[in-house]
Amino acid sequence: MRPTQNNAFQMYVSAVQPARAPRGIFFRARQRISIGIVHAILMVLSLLFVLPLVIVISGSLSSEKDISLYGYSLLPQHISLAAYQFLFQDPNQILSAYGVSIFVTVVGSAVSLLVMALLGYVISRRDFKYRRGLSFFSLFPLLFNGGLVPIYLIMTQLLHVQDTLLAYIFPYLVLPFYVLLLRTYFMGLPTELIEAAKLDGASEWRIFFQIVVPLSTPALATVGLFSMLTYWNDWFQGLLYASNPHIFSLQYLLYQIQQNITILATSASASDVSAIAIPSQSTLMAMAVVAIGPIVLAFLFTQRYFVRGITLGGIKGE
Image (cartoon, rainbow, N blue to C red; front, top):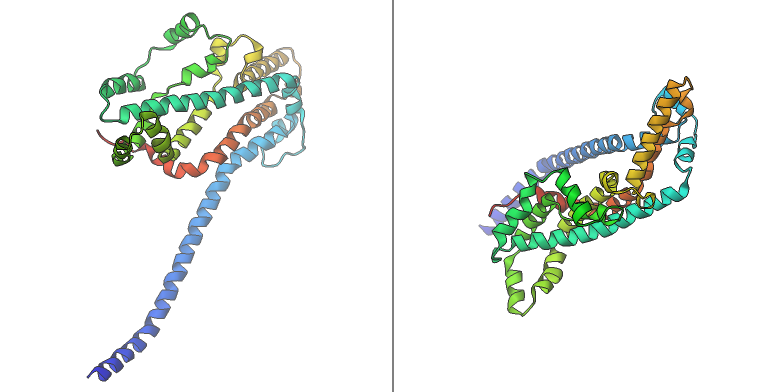
C-alpha cells in the first residue's frame, strides 16, 4: 500500500507543480511592477520637493533684469553673482553673524535638550512625588502664556541679558511641546530596567545617563534637531534684545538687509531711478541659500532617527 500511495502522491505533485509555476512567476512579476511604480512615485515626489530649492539657487545666481523679464526658472538665463556681492559687501559682519548663530544654535540646543530631557524624564516617573504638579507647571504654557510684555520685562529688568548671547538662548531653553514628546517616549521605556538598576545600587544620574539616554536616542535626536531649527531660524529675539551689531545673529542680520533692500527699492522708485539696479529679488534668494546651508547639513546627520522619531506624536495615557 505504501509504494502505491507514494507513487500516487508523486504523480499528484508532478501534475500540480506545472500549474503552480506560472502562477508564482506572475505573482513575482506583479510584485516587481508594484515596487517599480512605488519607486517611480517616490522619485517624482522627491524631485518635486527638491524643485523649490533648485529654483531658489537659480534665482540667487540670476541677474535682477533676467528675473524681471523671464521670472524664476530652473536654470539662470545668465549667471550673475551680483546678489552675493551685494550681500557680502561687509564679509566680516556676515562671518560674525554666522559665528553668533552657530554658537547660539550649538550651545542653546545642547543645554535646552539636556534641560528638557531631565524635565521630561522626571515627570514620566510614576514614583515621583511631585510629578503631577510639575507636569501641570511645565505643560500649562501649551495653552496659555504670559505674553510679550512680561517676558520682555523679565529678560531686561530681572535677568539683564539684553545685548548678550543669553538673550538668544533663554527664551527657548524649555519648550513645553518638546517636553511632552520626551515625556511620552520615556514612559514607553521598560520600567524593569530602571528597577533592576536601582537594585544594583545605581544612582538616578547614572540611570538617566547610562540607561535612559542610550535607549532614547531617536527621541533625543529628533527633539534636538527641532531645537536647532528653532535657534537657527530665530530673528525675533535679536529684534527685541540686540542693539550691538557684534551680537547680531545671522537671521536678524539678513532681516535687516531685507529691510534695507526694501527701503532702497522704494526710494529708487520714488526718485524715478530704475529699481532694477538694486538686486532685490535675487538678493532675497541668496539670503535663503546662505541661511539654509548649515541646517541642511545638520539634518543629514540626524535624518536616520526620523523614522522612529516621527512616532513621538502618539501620546500615551496615564
